Image (cartoon, rainbow, N blue to C red):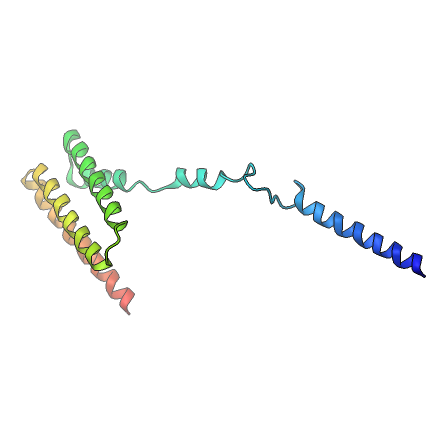
Length: 145
Protein backbone atom coordinates (compact mmCIF):
# COMPACT_ATOMS: atom_id res chain seq x y z
CA UNK A 1 0.00 0.00 0.00
CA UNK A 2 2.84 2.34 0.87
CA UNK A 3 4.60 1.64 -2.40
CA UNK A 4 1.45 2.54 -4.35
CA UNK A 5 1.27 5.91 -2.57
CA UNK A 6 4.92 6.63 -3.28
CA UNK A 7 4.44 5.65 -6.92
CA UNK A 8 1.36 7.88 -7.21
CA UNK A 9 3.21 10.82 -5.63
CA UNK A 10 6.13 10.26 -7.97
CA UNK A 11 3.85 10.18 -11.04
CA UNK A 12 1.98 13.26 -9.82
CA UNK A 13 5.30 15.10 -9.42
CA UNK A 14 6.40 14.09 -12.91
CA UNK A 15 3.17 15.30 -14.51
CA UNK A 16 3.33 18.64 -12.69
CA UNK A 17 6.96 19.13 -13.73
CA UNK A 18 6.05 18.49 -17.38
CA UNK A 19 3.16 20.97 -17.23
CA UNK A 20 5.40 23.71 -15.83
CA UNK A 21 8.14 22.90 -18.30
CA UNK A 22 5.69 23.09 -21.22
CA UNK A 23 4.66 26.62 -20.21
CA UNK A 24 8.24 27.81 -20.12
CA UNK A 25 9.32 26.20 -23.34
CA UNK A 26 9.09 27.83 -26.73
CA UNK A 27 5.96 25.79 -27.44
CA UNK A 28 4.12 27.38 -24.50
CA UNK A 29 4.33 30.79 -22.88
CA UNK A 30 7.58 32.72 -23.09
CA UNK A 31 8.11 34.18 -19.64
CA UNK A 32 11.67 35.30 -20.15
CA UNK A 33 12.42 38.89 -19.24
CA UNK A 34 13.98 40.72 -22.15
CA UNK A 35 13.12 37.99 -24.61
CA UNK A 36 13.17 38.39 -28.35
CA UNK A 37 9.53 39.60 -28.42
CA UNK A 38 10.07 42.39 -25.92
CA UNK A 39 10.31 45.28 -28.38
CA UNK A 40 8.17 44.07 -31.28
CA UNK A 41 5.09 46.03 -30.18
CA UNK A 42 6.87 49.35 -29.87
CA UNK A 43 8.37 49.01 -33.35
CA UNK A 44 4.91 48.46 -34.86
CA UNK A 45 3.46 51.41 -32.96
CA UNK A 46 6.15 53.78 -34.16
CA UNK A 47 5.28 52.96 -37.78
CA UNK A 48 1.61 53.69 -37.12
CA UNK A 49 2.06 56.88 -35.08
CA UNK A 50 0.16 59.91 -36.25
CA UNK A 51 2.41 62.82 -37.20
CA UNK A 52 0.43 65.85 -36.08
CA UNK A 53 2.86 68.36 -37.57
CA UNK A 54 2.96 66.78 -41.02
CA UNK A 55 -0.79 66.15 -41.15
CA UNK A 56 -1.55 69.74 -40.12
CA UNK A 57 0.94 71.14 -42.61
CA UNK A 58 -0.43 69.01 -45.44
CA UNK A 59 -3.99 70.00 -44.61
CA UNK A 60 -3.18 73.71 -44.49
CA UNK A 61 -1.10 73.52 -47.66
CA UNK A 62 -4.02 71.96 -49.49
CA UNK A 63 -6.79 74.11 -47.98
CA UNK A 64 -4.94 77.44 -48.21
CA UNK A 65 -2.96 76.63 -51.36
CA UNK A 66 0.37 77.47 -49.72
CA UNK A 67 3.55 77.72 -51.77
CA UNK A 68 6.71 75.86 -50.81
CA UNK A 69 8.13 78.61 -48.60
CA UNK A 70 4.84 79.14 -46.76
CA UNK A 71 4.40 75.41 -46.27
CA UNK A 72 7.90 75.02 -44.79
CA UNK A 73 7.42 78.02 -42.51
CA UNK A 74 4.01 76.76 -41.34
CA UNK A 75 5.52 73.35 -40.62
CA UNK A 76 8.17 74.95 -38.40
CA UNK A 77 5.58 77.09 -36.60
CA UNK A 78 3.37 74.06 -35.93
CA UNK A 79 6.36 72.02 -34.73
CA UNK A 80 7.28 74.82 -32.30
CA UNK A 81 3.68 74.94 -31.10
CA UNK A 82 3.63 71.19 -30.55
CA UNK A 83 6.85 71.35 -28.51
CA UNK A 84 5.46 74.25 -26.47
CA UNK A 85 2.26 72.35 -25.71
CA UNK A 86 4.24 69.28 -24.66
CA UNK A 87 6.41 71.32 -22.31
CA UNK A 88 3.35 73.08 -20.85
CA UNK A 89 1.59 69.76 -20.26
CA UNK A 90 4.59 68.52 -18.27
CA UNK A 91 4.62 71.54 -15.94
CA UNK A 92 3.40 71.00 -12.41
CA UNK A 93 0.71 73.67 -12.40
CA UNK A 94 -3.09 73.37 -12.19
CA UNK A 95 -4.94 72.34 -15.34
CA UNK A 96 -6.57 75.77 -15.60
CA UNK A 97 -3.13 77.39 -15.83
CA UNK A 98 -2.05 74.87 -18.43
CA UNK A 99 -5.16 75.58 -20.49
CA UNK A 100 -4.50 79.32 -20.39
CA UNK A 101 -0.87 78.89 -21.43
CA UNK A 102 -1.85 76.52 -24.24
CA UNK A 103 -4.48 78.96 -25.49
CA UNK A 104 -1.89 81.77 -25.55
CA UNK A 105 0.54 79.52 -27.42
CA UNK A 106 -2.20 78.70 -29.94
CA UNK A 107 -2.94 82.40 -30.46
CA UNK A 108 0.78 83.10 -31.02
CA UNK A 109 0.96 80.26 -33.53
CA UNK A 110 -2.09 81.55 -35.42
CA UNK A 111 -0.66 85.09 -35.45
CA UNK A 112 2.61 83.84 -36.93
CA UNK A 113 0.77 81.82 -39.57
CA UNK A 114 -1.48 84.75 -40.53
CA UNK A 115 1.60 86.97 -40.98
CA UNK A 116 2.80 84.57 -43.72
CA UNK A 117 -0.46 84.52 -45.68
CA UNK A 118 -1.81 86.79 -48.40
CA UNK A 119 -5.26 88.40 -48.11
CA UNK A 120 -7.16 85.56 -49.80
CA UNK A 121 -5.40 82.96 -47.68
CA UNK A 122 -6.18 84.90 -44.49
CA UNK A 123 -9.88 84.78 -45.36
CA UNK A 124 -9.68 81.04 -45.96
CA UNK A 125 -7.71 80.56 -42.74
CA UNK A 126 -10.33 82.43 -40.70
CA UNK A 127 -13.09 80.34 -42.31
CA UNK A 128 -11.25 77.11 -41.43
CA UNK A 129 -10.72 78.34 -37.88
CA UNK A 130 -14.42 79.14 -37.47
CA UNK A 131 -15.39 75.77 -38.93
CA UNK A 132 -13.15 73.97 -36.43
CA UNK A 133 -14.51 76.02 -33.54
CA UNK A 134 -18.09 75.15 -34.50
CA UNK A 135 -17.13 71.49 -34.80
CA UNK A 136 -15.50 71.64 -31.37
CA UNK A 137 -18.62 73.19 -29.83
CA UNK A 138 -20.79 70.43 -31.30
CA UNK A 139 -18.51 67.79 -29.74
CA UNK A 140 -18.69 69.58 -26.38
CA UNK A 141 -22.49 69.60 -26.50
CA UNK A 142 -22.60 65.88 -27.35
CA UNK A 143 -20.22 64.99 -24.49
CA UNK A 144 -22.32 67.01 -22.01
CA UNK A 145 -25.58 65.25 -23.01
